Length: 378
Image (cartoon, rainbow, N blue to C red; front, top):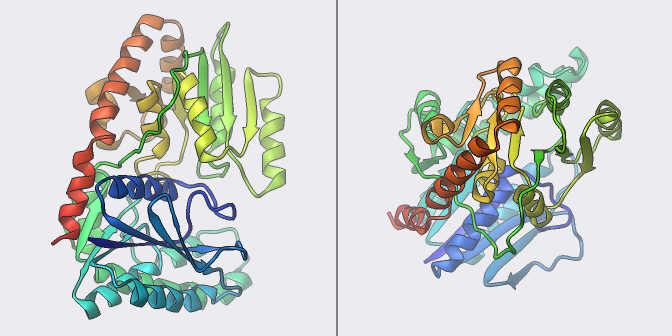
């Protein structure tokens, strides 16, 4: 079977950002390859030295040079079409909300092939999301007026592309419900897949980890507040993640001074494993609408780190399997739970064992890949 993955970027392209969607696309690519699927990964790059296409470790990459300008995305749509016409796939997969949904939908309809779309958040299936973000931003009224038609134009293609979806894959029951509500389509819940590279066994340290892109949506300031409120000895904390806004990084660095927190800045994906392997506790402080099923949860659980979250407990897994705790927006409850776990190593060790056992079965299971393949064959 020949599969085309339409992506905005590739995780290990030096010009690409690091985000959850790209991490999942990388993991799925490795999983599909292991099941002998002919994977064709089509992505945009800003690296002018990239060839038009190349085969790397059994995956065929097609590189599209980034188009400049406010309507660069419109020209890029034609580039994706040209590559699809060359690849001639049996199925096409898109993850997340973007104009590639329209490209995939029109191509699949014209060539009578399967088009599968994967949601990456509870709000993935909302219409006119770019316009809503613009109107809710801090931009001036004049700037909003100028940008409004451009964002509405992009939303038009995304909205049309979502309606063309044949099969929707959701990460959680919450996403399935939201997709039905917004799009009127019933999704299939398939767990996120995580390809685990072979690693040396690392002894756990008394380490509390926060790992995400530094942004207002991820609220790293709250992690600093939480750490300041607990009483610990022989424990350390790491706040890792990058931002393109230097002043924001400086703000986080200043707030962390005088605490047990060490800020690391941007860490690439492969290097991130060492920190998850060392940590005993991972803390998530994202806003309620900022995450779907964070890859950080999966990496934490697979490494035996439990998760404490301010808002997110996908599928109620943390509560059901005793692999973490969600305070449902109450910071004081999260602080209390963190203090309890720091003071109770036996309970922490028990939850760590639960987390790793659960994650290996839930996210490194080849049945996940086979479920996708069965959908592609429909």
